[in-house]
Image 1 (cartoon, one colour):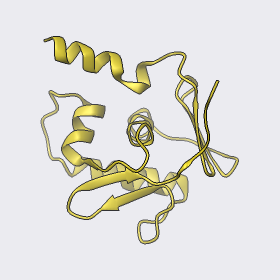
Image 2 (image 1 turned 45 degrees about the vertical axis):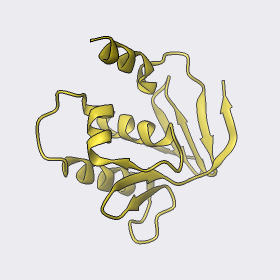
Image 3 (image 1 turned 135 degrees about the vertical axis):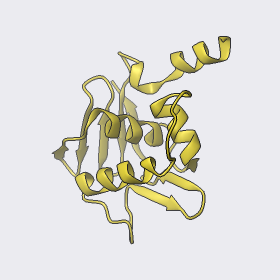
Image 4 (image 1 turned 180 degrees about the horizontal axis):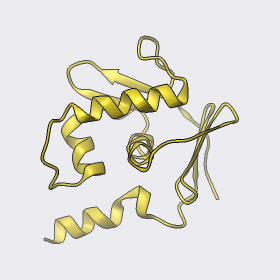
Length: 125
């Protein structure tokens, strides 16, 4: 029970005063739930935003589909892990990213996904 409560507190999407995440060409504002790519505003669904934010919270770290399901959908999600693939495809399309030569969301074949851009200026208010 305590582990679940701790997990809830650490969810980056739920932190109201978290600073904007800035990367090379990508800015994610968790408070306003806004994403910019190369200065262009990108509209994402709530779930797609949460998934992107989960990946961007640990740039370079590979998350399995199961880890992303738990982090974004919740530990009680029951369904096919491939739903993550569908949402990643939607995110890539919205961001103008290419699955063959990705710049933002990379694939770790047989494992899962990772956020590729390196932090630009770091976190800013």
